Image (cartoon, rainbow, N blue to C red; front, side, top):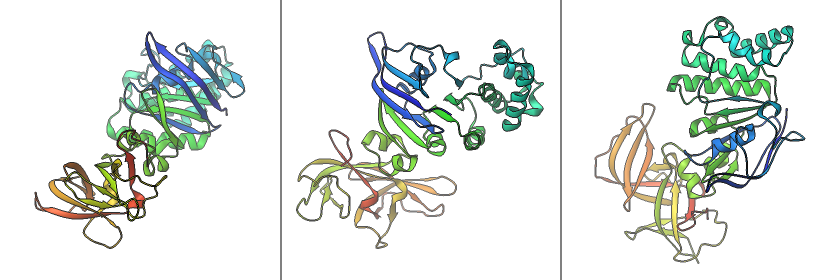
Length: 362
């Protein structure tokens, strides 16, 4: 197993700087997920680590070797792409063994690796089939197996589940997690799907405009986002945002909204004392809000009901607070009159508060 270190990486395409002075350290045996919207630079970073594009500045280390200018085949990596990229005229077994045969790996060693990999991925019955005879999930298993047979310590995944339907994505996501728990190999995985990121990763690197906004464990990312972008991008449905200004700096702090309502923030863990009149945005996740007065929270939201969206196991109540749209998780059988105004509570110490201008966490 190998550590991956990216130091002061710079990548540009013409006059467009995609990555600049980017640092990333992936520990040995760690599963890191690069998460972000399209165009944030996550695939560019992965391709730079793989050696698939030239970089303008910085260094890339795998283990104790500087691989910045080494060819992809010499970096000791295995890569799985979004496209299966299987040879259509070869069987699954042929696709698994092609690279090994080109590298003149002994036949006995090839057989050993194929046997071990096919057992691990449960594709033994598929080895004699061609890609056209396989389902999408089976093709992706073969594509993953082609990387595994290389017997390397660092695996790179570039949105490998994007072409699969929802059911297959869930199944293969579980299999990938099991795979990492079995191999304990270093894995770097690119996705725009936050569910994949939160369920697979040891740590998540949330990227935006070529910058890693936050690198932390999934729970930390979800519970304590460092800025409004991370808070809004991670979570489904997204975090609720309510704009206003801070008041009561000398006593109980509160957020005064545009319609004059005051949302108490007693118990919120401010990093610095809140400034009177400072423009701020309160962030509360749908499951952190409860309807009615249960005595558990000091923050009260007056919510005007606009829609109830059944989700199966639960429902989402959509409404407005001082003109800002919010959602609240409720029971599947709960029903409320459209247009009615309800009192909702939340725990301020579980919420998030951001500076309105910078977006940074307060």
